[in-house]
Image 1 (cartoon, rainbow, N blue to C red):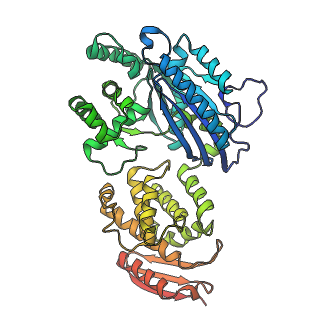
Image 2: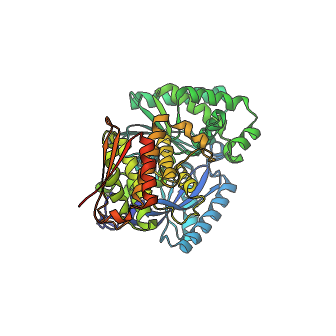
Image 3: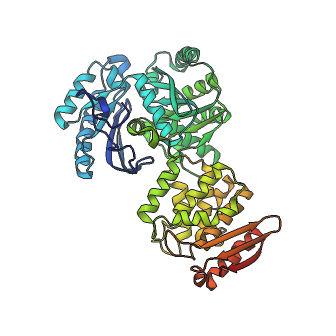
Length: 514
């Protein structure tokens, strides 16, 4: 169902309204997606760059639709009433925000409940929103595609936990492979007779079957779902981790075991308050931690990464033509930010080409971060000058950017901080510097000061600034100015060049073309 051709039949499933009108789409109008899960009902409105859309609006209502279903076979009556009220609100919000028709999908609780069809009919009658009830394998596929939105070309095993089910999907080279679903959701497991011992036996039974069908899966384990995110928050709290960004947060198998024990031994209310987890979510965390420990034990991944992207983002990815999927989400998001907020959109490319000689030997993964920094080097100019450097750092480290490890976020933040400041000591972000090596801190400072110099030679997006020539063995940095740029090289620009040379430990040489 990928693409933008009009369907030959009227029923196009949940993808009936193409999100991308042309394969070359650069932008994305506001799109509203509702995810009706077993535990929560959430509306997300996306906006911005097509390959890396921003979260314009995000609201979640904890309805616990799947609570008690093991005994009754029906949706939780109180949860059903709350979910219907939430859908009425979401419809009005969508109208006000301008999303057009909302795309709504429902997962395990609604698809398994006796009164699931009745609930969907009530929602459509009261709101006009049609709910697409997807099966477990489709849920797994969409969650995996959500991961691919943030990590193009990823490989590993995606594990998506909801209230009433847990799905596994294999991804390799940007493609979704084998997919499985199971009843290992914490809402459902909580109702299992026999307590923890019975839950453990049931979990191992299902995982044994899943492992036999999925085969060897010892690469990366991607975790999708609210309960996994809550466990990650607790892991951060236990470790005293300084960057509270869940997307791309990494855990080791050992950390999962230690955090599971930490959850067992802690007072739930005190732990909830320290980690910033809601009461309704915290009620499921101990059971979810039991499941996660068994998943890690069964598949033995080499590392574990949190994904904030899941089904909702998978719905967007579903609509992308392949050539849009193949673009780098980080570069797309930064280019969009530059086009929207920079004083001279397109000047980031000029800056990159000017400073590139300083980074000839860097690897491809670092080069893309340097490109991202150049695109963002002027998007915070509206901030007060006294706070501009910290504002840049804060934006880079906490922004909704895909395809960035935490260490890369801090590197990008430091580079942008040095775009506006010679010093990084004394800021409120010093504790985050521990996430990058001293060598990377130094390279980020060089990058920032190089951008700081380039910004002084301000002409147009097609400017000829001249060039930098870096001789690392001789420790000499030459600045060769074009005739057009030479008058711009005043006292402040010269001071910035000298600062860059001092950071490199280089002899400064200035030449002007004739």
